[in-house]
Image 1 (tube, rainbow, N blue to C red):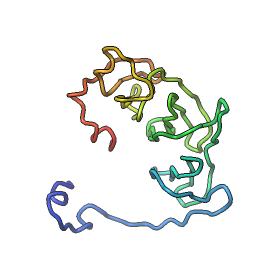
Image 2: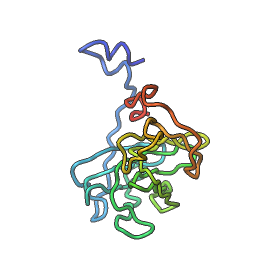
Image 3: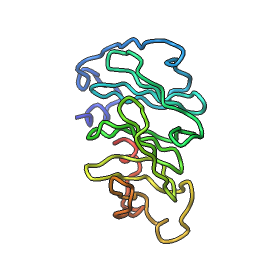
Image 4: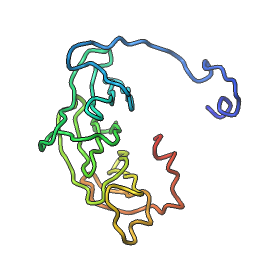
Length: 178
């Protein structure tokens, strides 16, 4: 329960942190991290770092810091041109990369699985049990129709639209921190 810590200007981190572990990351030419670091995901098996190489690269280490892979960046069919956002699908152990106007799915070692073109782009994608929640808004391309009134698009696992959530019913902060 972080409510007590948040409501106070001073908090004791031991109330919500059980353990701190320092993991030295393997260093080689491919694993060097470039500033800035945009995001870090830590799973039971992997550490993912979205860094500043070429305006956004993605590196994978195992849970002990051994370098696994760097996502392929470029303009090819199985490459990522520019990362806009990343998230992790815990059910399928896959990394979801928003590469507007595409979503690229990578396996847990950052190998290409599939890529989906989204006509209207997205700012973020969160995996659900049966599909995805896509953060919309002033996105890559505007629909310029009734769909612009929606902030969250609900899709199946193939990114086919199932439904929408209205802007005034959506908490952007909650979506971005899930």
